Image 1 (tube, rainbow, N blue to C red):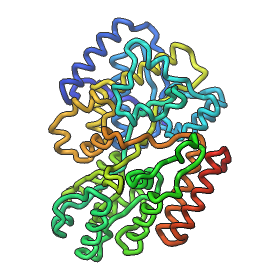
Image 2: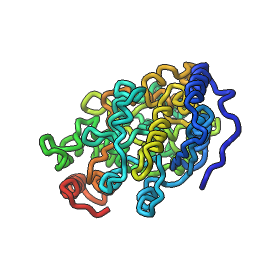
Image 3: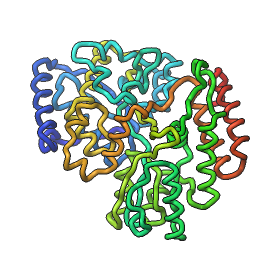
Image 4: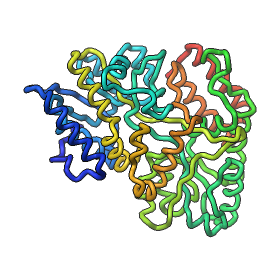
Length: 429
């Protein structure tokens, strides 16, 4: 669906930094404006709501301040459609795709962003959170820069915690289990925690327990799931499930039941925090806490989300226009607006430093996600060849082990065997 542009947009932006950024951009861009602007197509995958609205707003802002470039934005699933469009001879110039970009690289469909990053007024590693910068980097080349970033976090019903005598959110997974037992006893009709059985939510506790994505020295060709960390993580969630202190659920169902007061702790991401608040609709106070620390003594997380890519088969002017938009997107003004209106945290250190204190005080989800992104223990979601299949197997075997369809030992044995096969080149997806 092609989105229609909204009217004048720069006026009324919150914050002095946004207004000054827009004015500076307008002055610098107007001086180099050509009579015929470069037409830039952007495919993005957000479907409605504040995220899509925020991106449309920013695209219009860019168009107003860059008269030599005109961006047309299409809401479509670029991750699955852009390669077919390339084969048909009409790929977008700029697209947002998921971290599963191996198929794009295998098809040689993407341009390296390195020449644009290193150019005058380019972007540098020190500007970004480490997990954001390295997400999409392959062999020293950046083929993708995150358009949005999210991390896993837990939302909780503050009223229930208070009534159960739980004064502070848990700092460790062990303490979380103890709190869930208290909540189950205090509210027998309430589900203590709803959790997502996906790799982005399974790997963080595994890593916090000292786990590793790959066996050391294997050059990424061998997984490391036959480990005490994996056994401890699988057993932890299996115990919660058996004690009826946790269920598996997804997205809209978790939010709806949490909003109705049927769930005390809801697993989710920073991007879903605003949706949680909408589901609650002010019926009770909502809190957020980061994924707790594991046996390693620290927490861990994965940076995930869509990323900007430049598709091949376009002119040098179009490629440059795409790179100009990407660089503009990461400026403090656009990033602050994006964080305030989309629910995603800012991706650069400069924009994080300029987030209004009043906004952060009122938005716990953004505060928690910013702290997680700043942590050295937050890493990019794996995008290596074969890891898409590994994650699918991880999801399946974790579910079987937690729900008792397989023993933890058997599930990890199968997971290790299948993961190694995929990492060595075998594929089924």
